[in-house]
Amino acid sequence: MEKTKLEQKLKARRIQPTAMRMLILDFLIRHNEALGLSDLEDHFTRSDRTTLYRTLKTFHDKGMVHEIHDESGITKYALCSDECNCTYPNDMHAHFYCLECDKTLCLTELTVPPVDLPENYQPSSVNYVINGTCSACAS
Amino acid sequence: MEKTKLEQKLKARRIQPTAMRMLILDFLIRHNEALGLSDLEDHFTRSDRTTLYRTLKTFHDKGMVHEIHDESGITKYALCSDECNCTYPNDMHAHFYCLECDKTLCLTELTVPPVDLPENYQPSSVNYVINGTCSACAS
DNA sequence: TCAAACTTTGCAATAGTGTTGCATCCAATT
DNA sequence: AATTGGATGCAACACTATTGCAAAGTTTGA
Image (cartoon, rainbow over all chains, first blue to last red; front, side, top):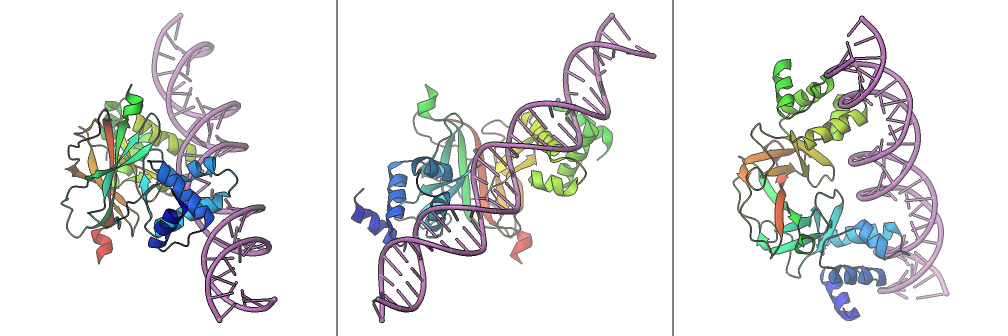
């Protein structure tokens, strides 16, 4: 994606657009899946772990990405759509985790159903992951 | 719970009923919530981490407990009901994770809805966690 | 009953993820 | 140019998860 577009996206979320952040955002955009810190480390080999870690944290704090906890046990992050505010229940959606290839992706259209919770339980977000085999691994 | 009852439960899952395992099973039964390794460590102070770790793993392998991944980032385990086979979709249910007290509990009655996945995606299990504030923390 | 075979437990060590403190660098502002 | 604040890099550390191996315990069969 072009530099100005990336800048705009970061500014829209009130994130200072540095070179590093634009690279990482671009990387997230190009990969249509949820990524963990180690995925960034593997790609940005000359950047420091901490920078990558804090970038993800900043992105998360500012609502640029959302966190997903799947069977892999590591924390992954996926880009939010431009309109996403990470509010319950509208912005909540399911994810698919492939047990074969270890990849996690957003099923944005698959929103969460309304739920009937016990008395005085107040929901604020949802971590919804469907596990199985993805199409690539099915063959 | 009485010793013979615990033994029966373990044997029903084809788990060799040792003293340690009965203690841990009893602990899990008494706590109506999902527990992590550290919770067991805190309670069974004279047992070794490894034993507790491997007991949970054995319980999981044999279908005595199911794994839950919530925002805490640690792997938690909750007892399956006697009839549970951990099969999709019937045995899958939602969980509630309280962001205040860090506790996770099964919402067994809240089963997972049927979903419409992309072509050739095969589901086999679900990790469904609703985050928010529990009744104890609401006040 | 005893020995062999197998399982469970404990100890030690290690890998991996997540996290923080501090110093340095860079960029924006005056 | 000097000041300020945020971003980055380095080092260190905490915690969870995991494995190898030896010791202890249990089961089985001669």
